Image (cartoon, rainbow, N blue to C red):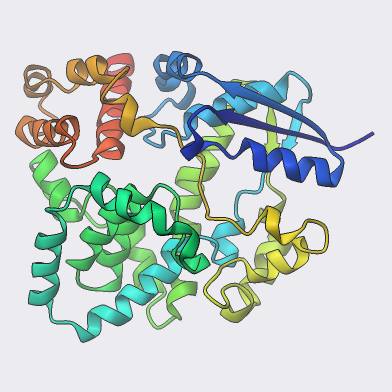
Amino acid sequence: NAIRTFSIGFSDKQFNEAPWAARIATHLGTDHTEMYVEPGQVLNVIPHLPDIYDEPFADSSALPTYLVSQLTRRHVTVALSGDGGDEQFSGYVRYWLTRTMADWMVRVPFGIRKFATDLLSKLPARWVSGVYQPCLDFLPQRFRVANFEDKWQKLIMQIGQEGLSELYRMTICLWSGREISDLVGCPVSPGRYEALFEETEGWPVLSRLMRVDQGTYLPDGMLTKVDRASMAASLEVRVPLLDHRVVEFTARLPESLKFRNGAGKYLLKKILARYVPRALFERPKMGFGIPLDKWLRGELKEPMLDYLSPARLNREGRFKAERVTHFVNEHLNGSCSHHHRLWALLMWQMWHERWIA
């Protein structure tokens, strides 16, 4: 029997990789099943997230992950996931970008970087994206990124940081340590993230960042997301790239076999090219996103305003209402996209109402 493959698609082309998945499936001759989901299907899952995750889980890709798990479970009981490849083979753009930024920051005084941060933050992200998109086809592969507005805002925050740990924090985290303290009104204690940076002191930068992700982002984010979403759909998902023999092998590989000529996953892509034409996979990395930015100004606006209202926040006493209101107002007036931050706060509030209140 042919291998079965599954994907879901979105009508919003910015988030839709289904056509590419279908082309690869056709080339490989798999028995491919795809489903295009409407916004209503995704939105209907949101009230169930506190039960599915049993914690305030703030990765919005949990929504399409649950839907594709449901789709897959209609046909099979066990599936394979490709999780772990990015964290072992330098697959994330943020790795080389952070290394480049770290090298650049050593040469540029903090005062100049702070001035650049203040200046660039005044440019609306949507306007900058509008300038960037027409140039996309003319840029080298390393500078072609999806979800440009997110990455632009992260770049601005990175410029004003000092030290590799804080620089990388602004790439993978929603807030800096100081911003979290301001948000909750108390200091935040160091955790596993800081400990892993201490343990890897002296390592090459890319290897260091991958190791930090392997101890934090991968188990706490990626694997938790897939495991709970799939289990909620009664689907078992296995992760072959995290077989201990694979992990031990990749740990011994030099960085040159992971990142080369401005692109990650060098060795994996060399192997994949034996089976799939490069034109089908040499594309900007998209992730598994949803149009959350738009939804928080539309379909999710009223629930957001309810859960994040100053009266409610002041009554609960967890977050500083004035800080949250600042994020809400900036997002709604379009001066800045805070959708990931607002989603995290919304997930906390929904979890709190379900299990604590």
